[in-house]
Image (cartoon, rainbow, N blue to C red):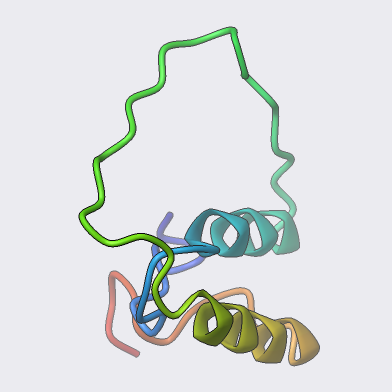
Length: 78
């Protein structure tokens, strides 16, 4: 998480955060492993549903175009 500076806190709504993490992890050379049906997973309940998902996707697309694997607004405020 430190290598990619954690979650991108510039993403305003729900939707796409997991895809953003995966893309940035893979950009740093880490491989993802699917553990579906192989482990216990807990998911937080969200009161909102996918608000601003289009904004999140636009931010992610810009970051992909510039190969920005480390977010500026994350664990450490760059």
